[in-house]
Length: 486
Image (cartoon, rainbow, N blue to C red; front, side, top):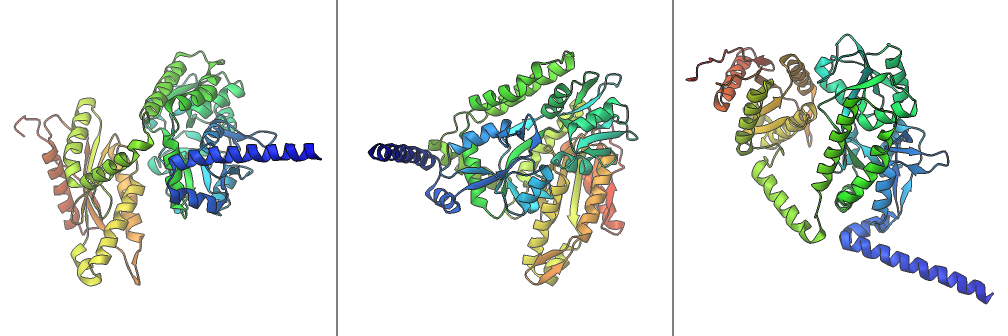
């Protein structure tokens, strides 16, 4: 009996020592309020995609494995409460579990308009290039525009990339599949032109299924940026994980990537394009990882203060969009880039219709709510990483976008007009709606065009939109002279 008591006492002592060291780590990284909040919760539950290797999966024994499992183990060491897996049958079930609040976190997710209704997202901690796979007889694909509109293209169902491509490229004939293998086999059989997806999943599926007669035909401009997704009714949880992710070193990230990505790619792929894209991916991950180097607790407060100061100097305090001061140098940079690389440039000037009447009739507080709702709709409609949204002054806003042709921009602007017209603005017991007039320029800008003249062209088209009855978008048809005296 005494031996049993001694063994039990030793276990208790070891447990207490482990808890003490665990608590010390948490206290060095988190605030007292954050630690108290976590201990009141008792545990943090998370969901994964159970069939998405190499990123994450459930093994036959029900064990969480993959890239996200490595990150969960690192995060667990810094938390004063356990991270507990809430198992689900598939990714849609995981999304539903997060929506129903059965789990507090999704380990790898990208923000989309539908998910923002119930989730908030940390800063992206994993960025993966998107690619398109075709049969070997297809030409190299430089962008989505090279994919024939009449040809069906496969994509993984339930992922944020599907929602993104449906919104950004409505002309594509997207065919969703529940896994990559089904889509790739359809490409192999000639029923699909190609398959869209991230490079890690595509390469893994090609290797696992021994598919050798397909090729990665091109890397697409938009990368998949993956974050931790937290339930939006617990904002302190987001603060906790944003802070803890900063503590994961570049060396740790690189080790995880090498284990689950680089090593797997060393099997069976001998075409030159694949290795070039793999090298680009590894370099991209390295650059992202290095950007977090030397972020420590001692300078965290200073970084946060500088960030707040930068936000105040560059952003409009009411809408959160960039302000006119930030706009001037950025539009000059975008113009120079498009002139140098012969890319289409869009500048759209947007003016809320009869905004003075709204303020006079429903009050300035309701008018402010109209501006905030308008800004949020803009951000959800125009969300490419290079899109620039600016509150230019009063009820005037400007969109600057690089790389989209006029047909694509016209469709986006018309969709936006319809969304805004049907959107109800609500404040207390008041409700109403607003419309907008848009004048826009879209073309490959000539070398003689400067930023001031660019704004003037959009402004002239805006006046034409107002003369046409408002609530419409008019494209500038003005011809820019080629003379240097313009």
